[in-house]
Length: 249
Ligand SMILES: Cc1cc2nc3c(=O)[nH]c(=O)nc-3n(C[C@H](O)[C@H](O)[C@H](O)COP(=O)(O)OP(=O)(O)OC[C@H]3O[C@@H](n4cnc5c(N)ncnc54)[C@H](O)[C@@H]3O)c2cc1C
Ligand code: SF4
Picture 1 (tube, helix red, strand yellow):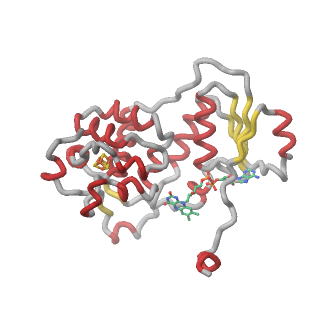
Picture 2 (tube, rainbow, N blue to C red; picture 1 turned 180 degrees about the vertical axis):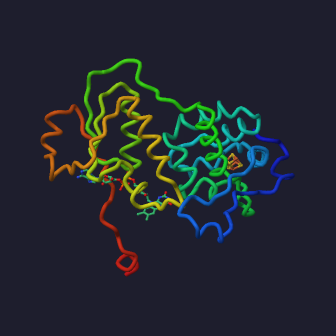
Picture 3 (cartoon, helix red, strand yellow; picture 1 turned 180 degrees about the horizontal axis):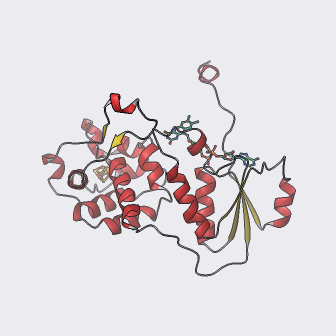
């Protein structure tokens, strides 16, 4: 676990925003990361609970207490490996996830949850800066072909996992660039788009082929995909909004 008495000694401290006067000059991210030492202190607050309630909150099953402890111990590379074992894109979730893990954290009993999202983001940003995140092409190919319709986070994660399992993966996206609502919904001040491009490059090096500007059902029939591929993943997202007004009736 982190430091046995960490949660008693160290207050919760989180990333701060750049001053509003600076923020209005650009459309870029404005969150200021914690220093390495402050991040380690925050990781030290994790109690490695017998029943880690943070797990109940995390939709991707991140092994949160494990990487909190690794950060506390200073083993950032192993923390990055552990984090990537459950999460293909922690640099996305470390920026835009609503962090249900923190809402679930035992230390949220008195509104002082571990700064899980900040620690996650620090691990992956450091992993990229240190050159620990590289292409992981499959050691053997299966000879199977998979088509994925849609390149939002769901399509991207499916594509990366399937390519690493050795399948030939083709992603079809109707927009001109991959990313779905990550790119065309979430604004740059929450997440800059070069982060998506960096992952797309990694995935291309792992063998994933992107076909952008192809609307399945209009430019290409779904029957063409089912005929040419062994499997088709439909990851087209919701597309149609549900308005709050209709919902509240
Ligand atoms: C303004 C906005 C802000 C948001 N902010 C946050 C946030 O801060 N945190 C958070 O966690 N979530 C946020 N979300 C929600 C988040 O973006 C979505 O939950 C997520 O992107 C859904 O991923 P997805 O892969 O299922 O679908 P999408 O991201 O919708 O991707 C689906 C992709 O499939 C493509 N597609 C669909 N049909 C076809 C077809 N027939 N042929 C080819 N391509 C097709 C679409 O063009 C799209 O690129 C936000 C959403 C919006 C709109
Ligand atoms: S619930 Fe909070 S304190 Fe407990 S293991 Fe998870 S992050 Fe650590």
